[in-house]
Amino acid sequence: MIRIDPRLLAAREKLSEIKVIVPVMSSKGGVGKTVIAGSLAVLLARSGVETGLLDLDFTNPGLHVLLGADISSWPEEEKGVVPPRVAGVRFMTTAYYSGDEPMPLRGKYVDEVFKEILCITNWPGVKVLIIDTPPGIRDEALDILTYIPSPRPLIVGTPSPLAIKSVEKLVKVLIDLGHEIIGLIENMASEPGPLKQLAEKYGLEYLGNIPYISNMDLLIGKPYELVDEIEPYLKVALDRIRSLIH
Amino acid sequence: MVHEWALADALARYIMHRIGGEKKIIKRIIVKLGVLQSIDKEILGFALKEILESMGYTVEKIDFEDEEPVLRCRKCGHEWKPDMSVFDDTVREAIHFVPETIFSYYKCPVCGSRDFDIVKGRGVDVTLIEVE
Ligand SMILES: Nc1ncnc2c1ncn2[C@@H]1O[C@H](COP(=O)(O)OP(=O)(O)O)[C@@H](O)[C@H]1O
Ligand SMILES: [Mg+2]
Ligand SMILES: [Zn+2]
Image 1 (cartoon, each protein chain N blue to C red):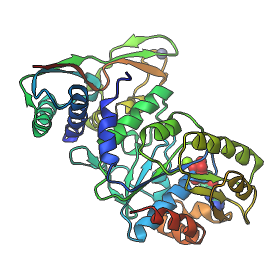
Image 2: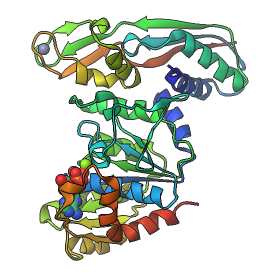
Image 3: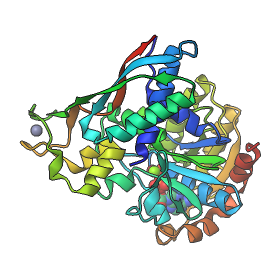
Image 4: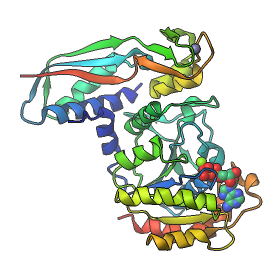
């Protein structure tokens, strides 16, 4: 018998009230996972859904930069910790604790941080939890797929052939595991492109394309301005996520 | 440091998972405590007892075993016991919540590498459960 880690038992309980858990995934880096995860969370919260946001990119967390979050104000302690609200979202990141220092982690320590964070974090009232993930199909991604109850992955890619090949591998892994993929978003694409074909090939929902936003750098750290810009392109994805809250 | 309650909750669930619901009297539990995380034993012990009793168990004795931290550098092989007192309170608190932040604040004293292993002294675990 596998010896179960006590933290996972607590983690499951802490996640049990959440209706939908959406890891935003891509085996490719730099395709917009962080931008999309952060934007989805802020928009869901703004539409009245109690939303949590978790940065699982431990060695390269970026959501706090995207959201302009003050990481010097730590989560409050309440039989564990309760993530503070940032742009209306309950936001958890290891950046509160590692600050601006690097946190290089070999795989087994990624796994430890994953279990520790999920064991101590409370999500009071949260109905939807959006998870930002690092690229690759390694510890963080596998931990999500193995330990998070019924994750509904949302996959991000760009029209680049490099991204498409990479994303297809992730799609295969998710399908083999029987996960219900919410759909695919094609980022930095002026029109539906090869990711739409990929979605069709695997019978997955294509949630639309997001064009290249030329003033993106000016929107980093200004979550409300960012989401105003990106909202029209995320409507389908938002509706799909909202339809899963029962 | 009420975060101990979250750890106690995890341990209590684990104990229930291990012994089931039949036997209600727990004679002794041994909890291994990695010193790296500076867990407050009193709070942890109190919380663990409370949570188990709320689950219907009677707990006679909880013992703690400290495990001193040992780190080993992967680059140069140096093995050492970190002196936690060199850190300020904020860093100790960070390590308290997420022990792996030690990779953010600590380097091998010989070669400066952050690529070291936590050989011992991390985390909280139940090493013995004795039921009647
Ligand atoms: N639609 C877009 N238009 C313009 N720039 C974008 C767009 N989406 C993402 N970016 C930029 O691309 C870079 C990578 O995005 P990011 O969300 O960090 O990707 P990932 O998390 O997948 O590595 C960032 O500099 C981001 O600002
Ligand atoms: Mg990212
Ligand atoms: Zn060294």
